Amino acid sequence: MACDKGLVERIRDELQGVMGMGEKRMFGGVCFTLNGNMVLGVVKDELMVRLGEAAYADALRQPHVRPMDFTGRPMKGYVFVASAGLAEDVDLRRWTALGRAFVSALPPKRSKQPKK
Image 1 (tube, one colour):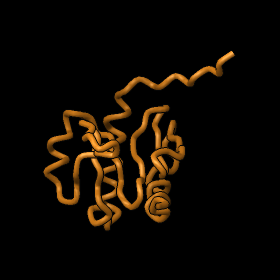
Image 2: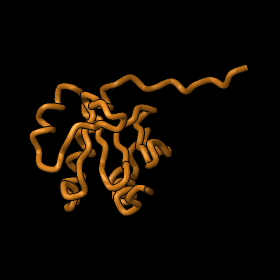
Image 3: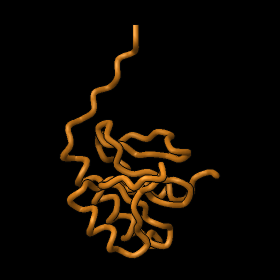
């Protein structure tokens, strides 16, 4: 199943002009990175948000949010937000801000050098 292209476009609009933002195909969808670190992703019709362990428990108490269990095992610090929780732009803006706040505190990822 392809990812929600409309949601991808909404995220692109939200992150337009943010320095250090990147985009790549991952998990059968699209992921957005900040200085090489994954921040957000769209998997099918859900938003994946990386917000760290400190914000994880609070995020899970929000409506339409569940642990990110892409591999069948929940990953602490990552959540999925169902499309119902992203209906309004203010909702999407809040989740992108939470993800960016956490990832902006991480050191930039160094690009991998090609093997010789």
